[in-house]
Image (tube, rainbow over all chains, first blue to last red):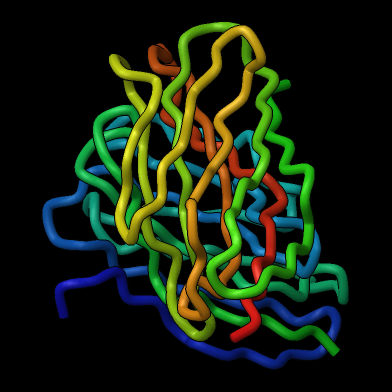
Length: 115
Length: 116
């Protein structure tokens, strides 16, 4: 497809389990972002990848969260030992450059529920 | 730390009413500013953006926003709302020049409900 693709669209897991969320950005987009959307909290920045530069991880809430981007394309967000407060919609976005050059294109999100 | 504040969390209007959603940011340098919209069941999409030039910018669907540098504000406006404008609106800001990151910071969002 032409848009940002995220999987799974819904994930229910038990507290303490690890989860992986996947993002396929738009082909050719060099920048990729992960955000977390919680009710009443807006969009919380998690991590940003730009080309081959070191990612900006300043938004990751704890060391249980990590992300990688392989081959400058697909990205995986991993949450280890999930907690109930991790329940949220995780959004991925991509763009051709940084946000100062253009708009972000968002995926539909992965809704994570931790029981 | 940079932050974006949207003062109105939930706004209810009747069709044809005028809309203004507030947005203030804390970054002191040159910024690029955005409004994004999320319609029910859809993904976030860009409504309008400001990089430089005329501080009054026009976006899709009759929306406009005015950048007032002295007030660190970028309020969204529409003269006459429609039922189809029911959505969640997010203001976002990023430094125009950053040596390390292109991080885009979003506000908490404003839910707009337009009654037919």
